[in-house]
Image 1 (cartoon, rainbow, N blue to C red):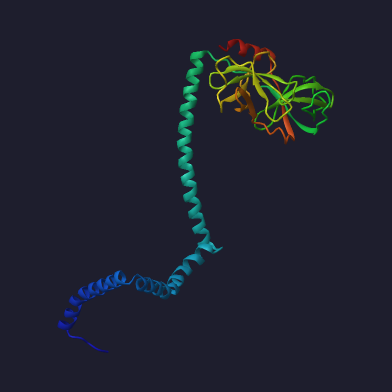
Image 2: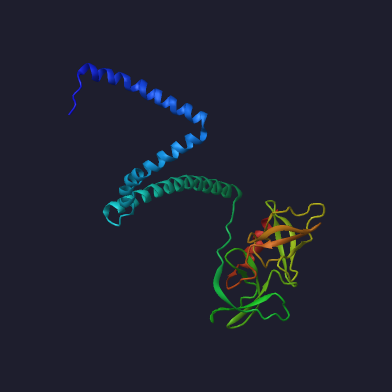
Amino acid sequence: MLRLSIPVRQALSRLTLPVMLLISLALILAGRADRHLGTLMRTGLDDALAPLYRAAAAPVSEVEQDRGAIGGWFRLHADNLRLAAQNERLKRWRSVALALAAQNDALKSQLHFVPTPTPNFFAARVIADLGGLYARSVLVTIPRDAHDIVNAIAMDGSGVVGRVVQSGSRSARVLLITDLNSRVPVAIGAHGERAIMEGQNSATPRLIYWAPGDPPREGAIVLTSAVGGVFPYGLPVGIVRYAGRNDPVVLPFAGMNRLRVLRLFEYDRQSSGDVAASLP
């Protein structure tokens, strides 16, 4: 083994930094002079180091994919980080929800708000679309113990579908909001402008009898109105769209072409009338 004297080792240690700087400067100049040469050198260095990279990464990858205790710890750690981030988001939303709930309670107390009673409802399966007098209606099954449910409101998971117009001991017919015979009083937008939604035997009912000079705004939400005492106030119906100039229609929230199971709600008519009377 070659042993160097202390002065020689000190001289070599002092020369290491200048030599490395000179080599680096030479490589930079070579890359500037010939970009292709620099690319070849980097590619060659990457190819030479690739096996080392793979060898170094292999144990980590094996541990992460391991089905044993160590791999489980890595997966558990990743799940904990994800759950912690979700928990922080939920905490922020909980604070927002509590603040809004407190504000809502305060506004209700100031307005002497009387909540609408919870309606009775049951699920009904659509068994037929028979047409006939009502071109847009469906037949649904009802429980044997159901009493007369005419004018019960039919909804799917997204919005109003129609109302019950005929009721028997085992089945009921629901007149859809898209039927030509359907007329539904609605409230439009944040201010609840009144209008009538009229079926056209097409996918989009149209809006009629809206305030002159104040047409419904494109994209405004359409809710049921308690006018007439059949529908309660505030059930979601759809969004305003324009089929042409001064021709507003409603794009229903409900999936009118894929009705399978409906929920039939029996609202208290007296409560609906009281709500309507309290509206401005």
